[in-house]
Image 1 (cartoon, rainbow, N blue to C red):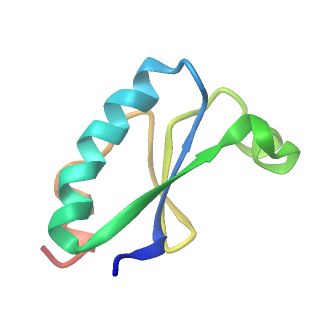
Image 2 (tube, one colour):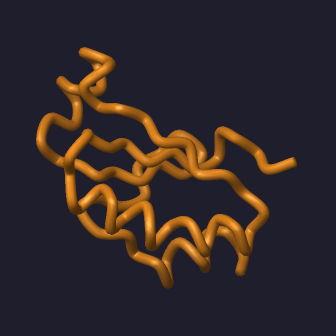
Amino acid sequence: MPDPGRLQLVVREGCHLCETAAGAVAPVAAEAGLAVVPVDVDADPGLQAEYGDRVPVLLLDGREHSYFTVDVPRLRRDLGL
């Protein structure tokens, strides 16, 4: 079963960059045997204060990995692929 907490994608409904990022992360996550957990930035005032309009943000193990666009080569490297 994939680890549900390693990869989180902070997104906003209706965000085209968020959809693009989700599409870029999904195959890499699948290859690594991980699930991508979407997190709605607008559902949490703390996240909204931290990220505001700077979405999407990819978190790896709870730490910011990339934002706006997914750095796929770096993500693959950081996941040991």
